[in-house]
Image 1 (cartoon, rainbow, N blue to C red):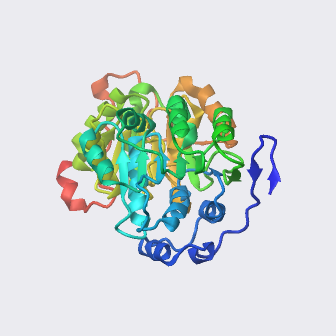
Image 2: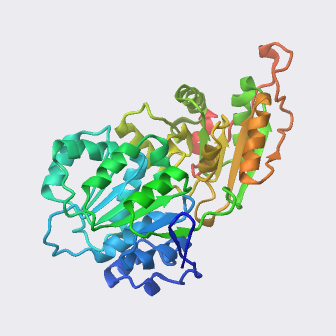
Image 3: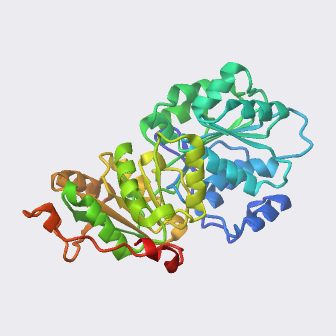
Length: 423
């Protein structure tokens, strides 16, 4: 290991081990991993876990979909003891969104070495009374959004005196959406004698300043590629007028027949509009996700998406990060994001854990410069596609004379005859 210009320590990465047994995890954790069907550590797991087991603070820099949730959970769970005498929580995980909190909590339960491990997700949009009751009974791990954690601190319902393990997950995203004051307030309340982990896809200056202020001689593990893209994702774009986007969307779905896909829009009202039109053709396999929905509705939709009952999810960037669904074959940028980093995170929803994926973007004639900036950022030319027998621009004919889009086939995992009567 050697020093870096920013004062962090860089770890030299070896090839990942062929199994979790070589990482010195205890037998209960190995049994939990086998039950979860995790047989080979991912590179971030193989690199991070040994340092964590040594008690080091760690910065883990890796793309989403690389297994970093298990990487930061396993060291704490490996040291968990049922006969712990001090009251919890003993571990605190901060995450930027409700969906990511739910996902991390589910992973902790799945990898727990015993049913006695008590995990509690805390986030807004749900009744706080149930969280009060769970905290009063005692918990080992709290996974929460910074805002709701601050709420509990203000009410005196959350005690950090015995926290010894702190994780900042998706740290760059938390700072992007304005959580820095809350994060710093929380870190000042946890004991100085603790182990701290910071997981982030990127390390902009504000994240580095946070690390330097609140971490002790952290090891920096960087597994991010030199360019922010996933090589196995086939990226392409269609040039299309705004008025023809929905017709093009129908044709793309007919052509691609995705297993599961996310259709990204910039605005919530556009997500609702596209969802309403698609639902009229595909029914219950289509859902919409954005920030205006009640939390219970968001949880129901995400549960349906994870189980593949929902095949097409129309969404804003609320699901651009932190959603780990491995069956997503396609990402469709119905609206090209103006923030280039959002483009990278959107397409990162497909091609998960080494799988192939397809990312298709709709680009209006006015967005040529934005497309060029995206290509420069990812250091890759994106191929242009053309849809046969489709006029990408508004033709000079009356609307009723325009060609009708083809009927949508059934795709995903649905039996064809079940939906044939509505297409």
